Amino acid sequence: MTAQTFEMPRAEALTQWRNYNAALKTRNDRYLKDMRAIYRQLKFGHKVVDVFASMKMVGLSERGEPKLAICPADAKRCFYRGWADGSARFSNPESSSMWRPPTSKDVQLPAGSFPPISVSRKDLTAPLPIIPPQFLPNGDLSDYFLLWEVESWTQEPPVDPMLLRRLTPNMFVVLAVWDLTPLEQAVLRGRM
Image (cartoon, rainbow, N blue to C red; front, side):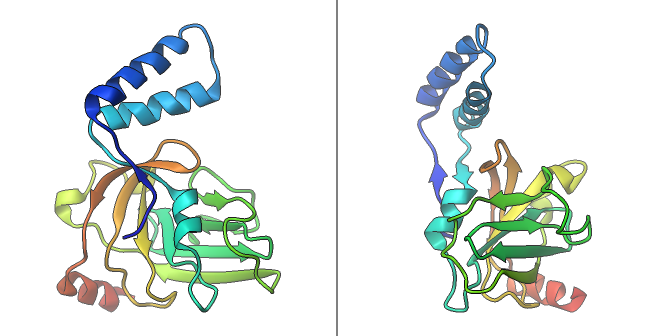
């Protein structure tokens, strides 16, 4: 999967984490907390993905549909709504209406994330990938997200997801990456 990821040597990330941690002893700026959280993950050797940059980099298909999708891992389907100004929202359609303000469970892309579209809005849905047992986090899935390439915004199963946990509105730590096997795709297809 094509995505904008960041990684660095663990020693360098540890140094940066310490710098931001020290700065937070005298200041309470949000960006300092965000950077500390990101460097914390990098010092453990994790990759961090910028979902906003990834969506913009990968862009839209020739049908004007996003090539990537992201949704809370506890959802059954991903709902995408794109607006004429290039902004978009990815959410769980079972959780509530798309007409409500965005929540921490949504991924809201700013204007200009995608090329402008000729209609006032575009609504799409796609199924979420399944998570193999070796990558299932302990406890509730509601704090996790799945990011994957969408071949087609239909009932076709995805093939190459990433399991993520949110750090900031656009930055997520990558916890696992895998390809769904043909058997897993067949089971998912049957559940749709």
